[in-house]
Image (spheres, rainbow, N blue to C red):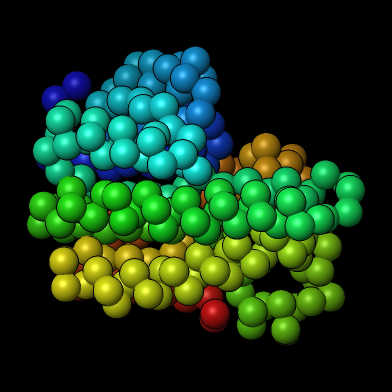
Length: 243
């Protein structure tokens, strides 16, 4: 497929679920999409599926907590495309929802994947993003990281408020705010997305939203006019969620 709009979008954790759907929707809108995944076989299947649907899609193996993998990712993007327009930090884990008590190791692993990795990946890709004339970073966060929601909606969401996951997303929200301020001088816009409760491996079949709808918030943030972009905000379907 010929690339329609000349823009390259990288989506981490995109071999399935919301990540793959974000890639599919952006690919059909003319973006070249690059999927990262830990499982290369599953990643290859996802790319094959997207290409068959008419997308210009590629795959890179990435363990988001690996410094060498992140360095290899930056090298691949530079050699293959020479720039990056969109970074969607979508990869994340929720290992505390296993019916067992949480513990420091689970919290540490969750923070490593959900907070430290997006920071490290973004930092590594800033030079390539700086070459775009409309660079955007979208951090896939959650309303469960909203302290306002924890305070006001506890009776409804307490069952989902595990220490590691909720804290990692609260931290990601702060990272979004900091990145929005510090990367603005480089022409990079940053916002966070709350996809909603979506039918995925993480969200389970009990979730009310289909994956197509869950991808819509990120896709909107990628495609919205630059002057309307909600810099440094946490957004769900165009509406701001309080910190």
